[in-house]
Length: 506
Image (cartoon, rainbow, N blue to C red; front, side, top):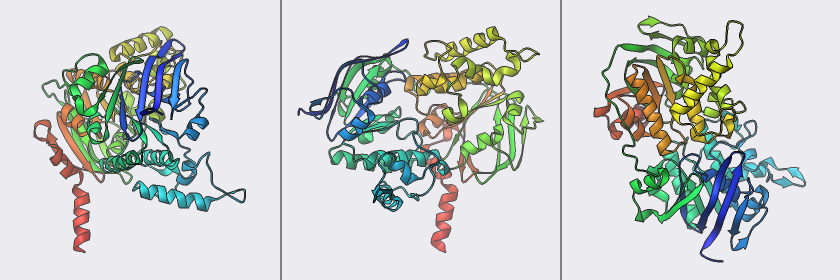
């Protein structure tokens, strides 16, 4: 066997109307972390699905551990030691953590399912990953961040020698990312070859040995990470230089649009009050579980409020359900685009039309197809959404393009307030800049923009004003020019620090 445990030569793959891969070359060494980079739609996930047996290649050759492999299936890939952690979670919500980890590889005793043995082995795996969870907990009861860690534990449990991680940190906290990197380093030391797909380029410096870059379904370049720079990587990815990763526009702040007073909802939103003005972008920072998403959902009435008042343009508004918020001019692009933001089995045109049916339909409730197509085309063109036509199912698009469709739904409305929850999660740099430019365009139009992000550079780079949350409360507020990462983190852990201090005294 040569220096590579995986060699993929001249790989091509087409889907109806789309050439996904065009003569792609890829290789992976044992004991290395290889970053596979490219914009959404570059072909990264398709290439890895071929390597893991999910898709069959149309042309080319695959050599795995020195052997030419044909007709690769997911089961055969698993037997070869290949495991993949998909970008979108692939768990059974009604099953326990242990049952998910051993799904398809169940432990048996005397021909019967051995729950005790699966629980015991799951405890060992979770301990190894420093994940503090009960193996019997149903996965549906876990937050997204913990579900992601279960996915990682599931892959690690198969003792894979080739591990593919597709956006593994997209829903993890800083401490969970640190724990994951420790696991990656151990796997690497054990000789495992790891393919790491991520749009969070700042992570690469901590774990990556080599970089392979794709663009528009083609292989572009491979290089040692230590021998390149971030601007060079970005230029290879997008085919041009990105002049500014966090474009900011200056606007005169206008009148107050939105005022939230003493909002409480469940255990995660406690007496939250803030204002949002015309022509400004307000970012909400905080650690996972701080109550940021819950606050946006309570404002939009996706979740019920316990108490509090909402004012729009100085007048109180009653919002008991999302349609009340939409009609008032408050819209939300939610955190989980597939679960809450899209109907993935409907076309892009139908997705864009859905929340706008109140003015697309005539008085008899019949959809005006011409108007529906017109607003959909306008939104798709403005956001440069990559698709064959408006009739393709939203679920067939790449993660970044799905996120754009979620945003596109609201472009057609004359909304006063647009709330974005993790708007750039899982999308590439060029697509992120397009989302930032969209937010800036809304800002220039006098629309209030409120957004939640777990990426600190993003919050600091785009926001005019930053709200910091901890334990369901707003603990700090800063103008962008005075905010620092240390200051934000100090206020993001304010109540946690207080609790620790009180515990040490007692």
